[in-house]
Structures are given as structure tokens and as C-alpha cells.
Image 1 (tube, rainbow, N blue to C red):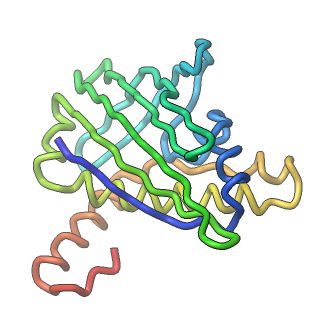
Image 2: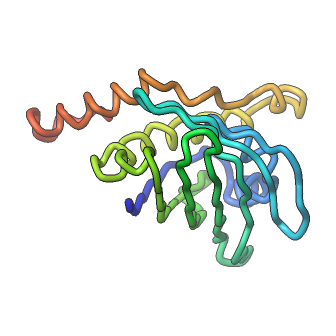
Length: 189
């Protein structure tokens, strides 16, 4: 299944962004469609992710585990797995991240190895997973930036990612693929 790599910059010092990444409930609030339901201890979190892509919708119930945290190198990884009880799809992912200081800002590099089974797997074969992940990463980065720029903790708590926007996300991703096929390098993403 797809290997996804994404990068984005946040206009905050690397230590501030590192501290944010260690607060899993805050990170989850910035992930479109994700809701934490409980902390299971030892860096294990249970939750759900709702997603609707074109005609397929799923609500994955599962868990995620923080692993390989290295504060000196500013790297870590998250292993997640879940299943959609209605549609029978299954998903697992290992997401590695690295934070790099770029002046007063921080570059966030993410690589994910995703495995899908069931009806959601067809999106991995079409390449739409890469396009959808690009859009979700942009939404995550925007939410992260807004939370970190909020004037008060109360204002930061109000900033949350929205639901995964099914048809618009699916069709905008499909349109981006069509533009790349016929328009060369005019990819606005």
C-alpha cells in the first residue's frame, strides 16, 4: 500500500512544536475526522476516525501508540490500527515524524506507511490516498498553526479540525490527478 511523505512549516520554534506533538489530545484535535475516546496508558490512546471518500464511508475504531520518541533528535513515531465494524475495512499505519529548526520556524517532515484492507483499499490502488493525505496534511498544519498562535489557552482549545469532507475531498483529489495528467506541472494541489 502507499508510502506517503509530506512536509510543512510552522511559524513557531522547534521546542514549542515538539511540546505540542507530545500532547496527543491536542494533536488529535487537529487531525480531521479523529476523536480520542480514552487514554489506555503507556502512550496508548483509543479513538475513532470517521472518513467518507466518494461512495465509501467508514468509522474506524482502534488504537494508536506513541513510539521511538527522541527529544534530542526531535523525532518520533505513531503506530495505529483500526477496523470499520460496518464495512469490514481495516487499516494500519506507522507514521514517523521529524522536527527541524528553520530559523525561528519549524519544518515538520512526516512519512507514513499505510496498509488498507477491504473496500477502502481500492483508494490505495488508484493513488488517491496520496492526494487525500496532502489535503489532510494541509488541514492539520493549518490547525496546528492556529492552535500555537492562539492568544490564550482557551482560544487554542476552540481550534479543532473539521470532519473529513467526503465528496469535496474525493473530487478535489480526483481533479488534482486529472490536472496532473493533462496539465503537466500546473498542480495547485
